[in-house]
Amino acid sequence: MFTKRFIFSVETVAALLLGLVVLVTIAEAVLRYAFDTSIPDAFTLSGYAQGIAIAWGIGSATYSNRHINVDIVADALGDTGRRRMDIVATTLSTMLLALMAWMLVRRTLRAHGSFEMTNDLQWPVWWFLSVAAAGLIAATVFGLLRLVRLIRRQPIDAAP
Image (cartoon, rainbow, N blue to C red):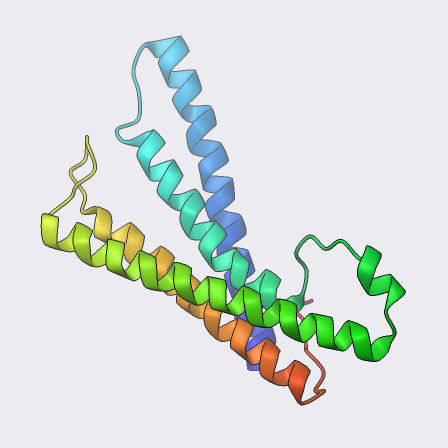
């Protein structure tokens, strides 16, 4: 039950961040062309918001198996073959997510150590990178949880 609520919360925040990206982009275009002004760091902050939404959204998609699938091979396999293929695919995905999380944590530490800032507002970049890194770490944990449940033949409770 906790997993279901947590995934739903993650998806809600990711959706709100993507909505914010849309609103900032529209506002930026209107301000630029109608009033010859702009929102400070709009492009940069929209990019970070989109990256954070994607990093956190990957975790829920991985756990719930709601990412894009090509089932040509899976349809030809029986239940046992499909389960084995799921285990291999989840293992590879989790390993990739762990590698991405590790690399983003390293990038966050570099940004923190170099005092990297946004252009206009001079906000520290490492804040945004750390939130995205936390999303990839959570995605790795969700991948491991899915893998354990697949191996144990336990049901995977997806978010509503």
